[in-house]
Length: 87
Image (tube, rainbow, N blue to C red; front, side, top):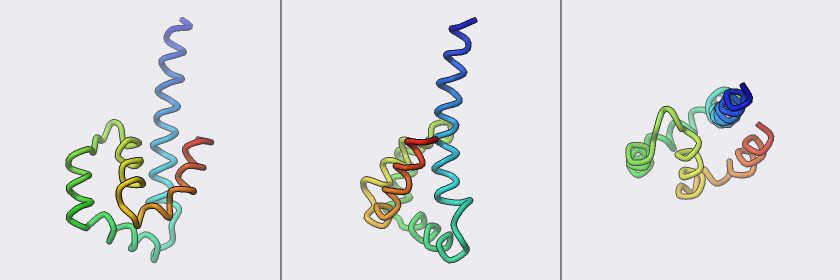
C-alpha cells in the first residue's frame, strides 16, 4: 500500500507543478498580459522549441526550457520559480 501512495504522491506533485505553470501563463493574467503571452508563443523560434520539446503529459520541462531560452519569458522566471517551489 505504501508503494502505491508514493506513486500517487509523485504524480500529484508533478500535476501541481504543471497546474502552477498553467495558472501563471494562462489562468491568472489579465487580458493584456495574456495577449502578450500569446504573441510570445506565436513566434517561429518558440513554436520550434514547443514542437521539439513539448510533451502534453509533462509540460514542466518545456516551461523551464522556455524560461531559460526565450528572453521574454525570463521576466516570468521569478514568479514561475516561486510557483514551482511552493506548488
